[in-house]
Amino acid sequence: MPNFLENIFAQLKRADGRVVLREIRGEQFVGVTGSELLEQVGKVRVFLRSSGILPGERCALLAPNSIRWVATDLAMMAEGVIVVPLYSRQSPDELSAMMKDCQPLLLFVSDAQLGEALAQSWPEAPPRILLEQVLKENPAKASPDGPISRADSDIVTIIYTSGTSGEPKGVCLNVGNLNYMLGQTTDRLGQLMSAAAAEGPDRVFHYLPFNFAASWLLLLSCLKRETTLTLSTDLNKLPDEIRLSSPNYFLNVPTLLERVRCGVEESLSKRATPIRSLFEKSRVAWQRKSEGHASGLDRFRLLVAEKLIFNKIKQRFGHDLRALICGSAPLAPETQQFFQMSGIPVLQAYGLTETTGICTMDGPRETAEPGYVGAAIPGIEMKTGENDEIVTRGPHIFPGYWSRPEETLRVLQDGWFHTGDQGEVNARGKWRISGRIKNLIVLNSGHKIAPELMEEKIARLLPAARQVVIVGNGRGYLCALITGTLESAAVQAVLEVINRELPHYRQVRNFKLIGSGFTPESGLLTANGKLRRDVVNSRYAVEINAMYEERKEREAVSRQHP
Image (cartoon, rainbow, N blue to C red; front, side, top):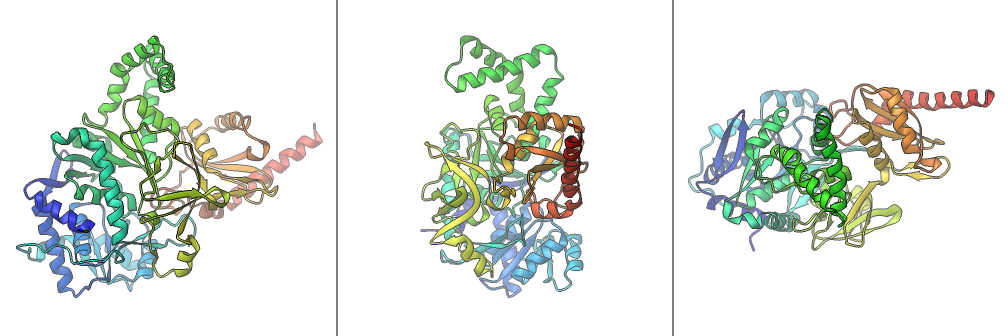
């Protein structure tokens, strides 16, 4: 049976004269057909062979998403070279640490400046190869060979985790992992698009960096299917790029969908009273409809809202959207409901790099449940262990971390991978993610609190907040760091509302406003936007201690003047 890469090459040959991949450049598309992409792949393969790179050796790829990135990735895999994809916006020091760990023989870069910054951080970095130079100087193969033969156990890629705590680790994924997972993803996409089979290839928009496992998985899924994949080239122009590409579906992180919802709601809040009232009443009507007891008036309001409000929301994504796919982190239930109400299904997926990107997926033929990330996909076992930790086993589990056998043994026990995520499963087999084991806050009273859901709730009630970080490990109560431009009175009002609903040990007793938001460049967020809590706690130790001292002083004054 052909492996995943052989299937991709066969699909590209069938798409000889059809555009399979394109970049948005302003208002124009720059694309390649299947044969043109294979020609670029052939040029990179010629270069790899002339450089003496052998199967099983490692090469790094540092560049933004582009057609050239895809051609280089496919060429390295076809030659049996282990691909080490790196994030072009990550700091040179972090990139150097990753490369020191896996020691690639070559570094493919998109531009000289990017390579020079890395060389300054690590003078012993491997030779830097410009993608453009490789494609310009090497001859095309008249008839590109298929991929070399690979065993299921052969390593395809080393993807470095974001490193929310400690150093990033290189996650090895092998041919067997990709064979299995791409079979699952392409099947789900086939279900999503089954009613549109006569309309031609899938149209997919993509903006997430290919060095993330789920993003790369979607790329390979699109190359394996009959698809026209459109790559974003300017994140500042995402709304225009999305409308121009008019996709059937695309992969998202919660941040973008939250931003769309907040933008729409803020815009509607400035509209005339009748429109604002219609939106709020339609929200209630939709909730009743989803619970199965909508009245005639509810249905009428939804019909009017669809014409006056919801259709305009859908137009933001073009006229051909079938669904939005969302991963990386759980999506707020309110946001998923917002899109469902607008007639846009949001299909959630959950997984880690170590699980080949995915463990669960919402089924395209089912109604997604807000707050849940779907059921385990066929062939995957999932259950909860100690502290409600999700553990899983199956053909999606990675073989191990690069050169870290002790770390591998710690997370792989008796065939089960310990995700570090907390969760629960409902009677319908749908999973809900509630937090990270490592993020558990243990008060000096012994109470354990998962901070994520509380942080999300505070952030939803404070739209101007960029990040909310709850602290209190080893302390007597919880406090919060909040970034963004906010008024203290507004924060206090929100905390009072939330605290009334919580037991005493989960109440947030004090907070500190921090004007500027956390960013990956500051080292306080990972490359894909997750909090580096240990770094935040360390960098803001003075402010955190001050919160607790301030609280003590207030309590002392209160005792003296009851």
